[in-house]
Amino acid sequence: MREILVLGGAGGIGQVATKTVLASGEFDRIVIADLNLDALKDFKKQLDSDSVTTLKIDANESLVSTISDFDIVINCIGPFYKYGPKILNEAIEAKVTYVDVCDDLDATEKQLTLNEAAAKNEVCAVIGLGNSPGLANLLVKYAADNLFDQIKEVDIMHIHGGESFEGGAVIKHRIHAMVNDVPVFDNGRFKMVRLLEPSGQEYVEDCEFKDVGTYPVFPYPHPETITLPREFSTLTKVTNRGVVFPFEYFNFTMETVREGLTNLSDPNNMDTDIDTWTSTILASRSNFLQKHNITSPKGCLKVVTKGEKDGKNYQYIFSVSSQTEGAGAGTGIPAGIGAIILAKNTADRFGVFAPESIIDPMEALALAGEIIPKLKISLGSSTGSMPVNIIEIDPEGKVTEIDM
Image (cartoon, rainbow, N blue to C red):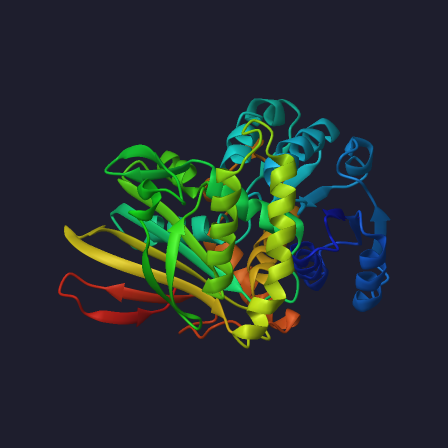
């Protein structure tokens, strides 16, 4: 009997992760846990499944005894710079297989230091298994293993917007990205830039996103820039850049943070200030959506890879997109898929892993191809059964759409 716990299961990402594991039929018992009891009840009613139950939890308290009752836990509680290392520590203490969607660099660095503790307790923990990081890492691994003799460069770009709801944790993550150093791996070396400062502005450029449109992208402190060079020694460049639409809303966020940084009362204690900025940003959101006539979400992950094959330079550009789904589906589905894979293949490797270090991209994408239709989610077109569009650019500049 397999039992899984989804922490933050009533949130936008947690709901999709829950639907994904439910659709797989791999679990006899699924418990969705959240602080918001009303949201839990509404979501449970929507699912209408005897295998799903609910549990009210507070992530500020110890969750060890709760987690220990399960085979696998998916952690969707953010912001991860606050809760990621804490909850992973608790899963390791509970000796339970762990998956999360952590997209904060500093949290990832702390989580990776728990590798020895996880191995000692025979725990397999996969961190950052969402969209970016997560799916992006797996697409890079696929390219490195199947398309190149040597992969040299990776540029990860992402966009989403128009979701019916954005919570405070999402905004705080966005602010976190704007006020902290962003690592860029360029010419085989790491350098730190800041999104709001000239160092970061050097990396801003327009990106054409499939099914969404063309938008400027900005440096994000997502952890692919530190984990991918560790896994693939031939890489000389890894960047991660993103944006949210409507762009006027994203720009308002940047200006709110800029103004807030200028007027900080205590730079060493920003929690109160960030709460104020978050409230201001969330209060503005509906007006921006209405102004730009945005009534439904969209999203796209674009991964540009460059390298050598047969002594010549090739590019492969991956796009996973939707005209009806945003961050919830893009992040929640990979987390659910990862949990299903770990349930099917009883872990024989223990420690804390980035997705590219332990998850088979083909297994994950094949499983996604089976489950996504059950979720009734629409993704952009591709040439094959998997929900990924791939463009090859050969040494002569010829552009060809290919299948995995």
